[in-house]
Image (cartoon, rainbow, N blue to C red; front, side, top):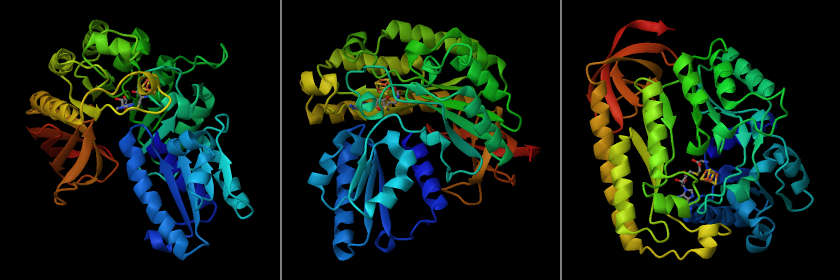
Length: 429
Ligand code: SAH
Ligand code: SF4
């Protein structure tokens, strides 16, 4: 979501006549799009903000703007703590960036409400020409005890289905072939739209999957509690919906899950995962996991390791618990797992994830898969890079143009990347 918002900020600035400066020291405007999901995001940002202060000291005409979730968490405090900041705004006020820049000439300006326009309605400067992020909802109504998102992105609001479909039709006309639908809790989509106008998430998936010119549809992140049979059926029955589900588990211990307020047990999560595997042949499943949550025992942690093995994940984002201000866990649970034990656990978890995903990746060897070509490989420019429908990256020998779909025979696998050779000419050019 942060990447999506950055693309919109760049698009909006370009529409106002700005261009990206090659080096920071040359910029007239320094704009940060901040994240505050973990303490480490804040720390990195504060380092960068220190450099902006130096630049501003040398050139007082430079405008320093701070947008995004960290700004929202600080609100007006930003201006007293960091007096060189000219503009600060939360993720719900992105659409007002142009107006804020204009007003800044008169006074420092802050904007922190949640009811502005969806950032998804703004012009975008996309990083990948054939792929687009499409915001379908913002905010989150869950109360996961570790998470700062609900307090910095507000209550959940869904975009109208017609507006989403119009945007995707426009993207297809511009040559976009793959879209990823975005929401903090993407599969609870639509409940705030009046009956009669709303689509369920499954209906929206089917509708997006039938937009001409869109070959691949993905979405992130669903919450297990809202993952219903109709979504699994839509994925199985709609050719454009890719065989990949990112299903954040957070922990393999039901005791920890309860304290996290995730509202499911390990058993319910595994049942759901099995239904997904049964319903969608050859699906890949990835997850998010946290280690070192307050009170996490060795046994709880072993449960997370065994979940990784039982679930046979194709990949996982792994995080060390970070207490966040204003959250239930951050305010009322003792951050009692020592940094040494946290780092021991994350290392063991990363190793287990690699082992499991490497073993899983070997299932592709000898098979032929459809790959959407992204461009030259980053490590070996004589090869091409692309992704399988399962969202697994492949480096392969071939001559297909970026943006085309090719069949690739897979001959090798590491935990994160497959290797192979293009077969024949592109399926679509
Ligand atoms: N809305 C999405 C993404 C939330 S943030 C979802 O629910 O899946 C992305 C991930 O960051 C979360 O899934 C969680 O694994 C991790 N995360 C969130 N808060 C955290 C915290 N305080 N400490 C460590 N990891 C955290
Ligand atoms: Fe955070 Fe939970 Fe909402 Fe995801 S579902 S954004 S983890 S509160």
